Length: 284
Image (cartoon, rainbow, N blue to C red; front, side, top):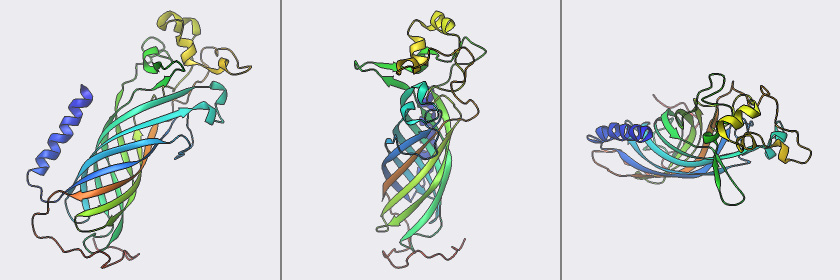
């Protein structure tokens, strides 16, 4: 419900902007998603890439500056079998991500004068997630329900929220097919305020305490190293399970089709290919 309220607030803001808008574009996005955290420590590795798609509305403040309201639906995953640093831990997770965000976008060149331009973007948003893993029998385990590191009952560790804010930023390239249709490619990093996107952050807690609070199966969910050949038993309390000093993040690499919704008002006429983008500094 809280996530829905935040989404509505974004929409109300943009609808207010739309009341006098004359330069609106619809955008449709598709691409690959990845994550960085305790089960995937390499920056921008698409070894375990999943799919992201989304839609948005782009408002043209000037010919170079845009405001974007975007919704993305994505999946991220991590598995210790690809993690040389913690393979013996043998954990895995997946999570669906639903994100709504407001971006500012700056184009280095005017697409009414040039046929292509690099751009920068950054903004603020909210996303919803819920880490899980699937069982071989078709069942699904939602990891937050088992408080695998004692959240809510051990050492003042709080339960983590399943809705958090994100700060996305990145770079891309816009190409004008015509004055009303454009093509875009971008890559963006989405910083978060949580270290539990993958349900891993701090240390193991006492096995007996975890059983007493969350049931017999909880230690089997918190640690899977003993399922490997010659794997060690459940670690002693206090053994590092993750790195609490680094927040998790995720990233999207997408392509997009951008279509003008309105064309009111006098606009500069665009002729495709009239001016190829150059390395000259743009006029501000």
